[in-house]
Length: 501
Image (cartoon, rainbow, N blue to C red; front, side):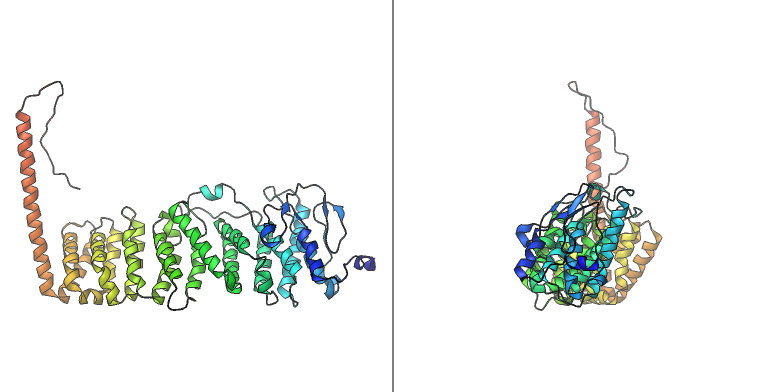
């Protein structure tokens, strides 16, 4: 019996003859396949659950129900294991509906066992992967991984707005996880020739992988993050395309799309990519920095990826300190007016940037920056005011202020004095008094001069306000003495309290 099975193995043939059967072997029951016009990987057909004819290298064409298990690798000679690998990959192209947990239980389990066997073989493979195996591997991964997410994936409220939401887990993860492991081991294998594989792990394949980052399953995004990073490292020819494609995702997210589930993971990948940029930075990288990274501070969901975004920004500043002033201008441009949580995050990032900024770049932005800091000091939201005042605990920032106190004191001292006079929160009031003492010790004469100018300005404002109030009072008194004319009644009442903005 064993001899009869072995007799069915194909004989040794030319390379061109070996590739053609793999290309023509269509995978059943897939949701999406790879475009054959791009890389020679065949398209796929939908699986209806009924009997299908499955052809492979090892088994002859026959009518089977679901997936017919294949021989284990240990039962075939070493010379035929690659052929068996191709046949197993072809059969694993069949996908099942996991929406119904009671459907196709036997077939699902058989496929899972086959996937586990493939994962073990790929991880321990000691021979070079031939082109037919590469084609079959890419086809199998495309059949199982590339899919369109249901509508609820893109309509759910973002997790940054509702932290209590539990993550969504894909019901087919028992199969997807193994496929991701197989793909990762395949990409990182020392026996994979990148020059051959780049024809099949091509631009289309990479774009479909990037589309999967919109999944809400955190386990899938972690796997994708690792795989994309390995592809970026192995296929140098695809690096510019990957950077451009990720930039396009950021552009669409900032300009048009309301939300994307994988921004944090993509930024995390870019964080490690940026650290490997050569100096001086290319113009392409500076454009990405100014047109993609900085505008990512604008969306309201920035809290879900702010840590990764801040890390990428600091990586760029470490590479080129001149970019620090560009970041601060961008933050001031996208500064949140009504979102106190974002203000606190922005203040934290500004403090981190100021720790790395040089004097020349600081002087370019110090006036608009401290005008905004002064507004935050006077914020009625106590967390914003506290975070702005905490900046004076940083010795480097205090040193920058001291060296430029002639320009900064006239902006900051009035803000501190307004807090001392009117702020409602005791903790903010105490911090304000401490900062005022610090500035007074730094340059008492300048502090007193700024304070005197502020009080003089207050007096002028009070006189102007009082004059305005008297004028309006006079106009209302005159209007109240005039008779009503025409058919339009006019009700004039005296102002009981001043109106403030």
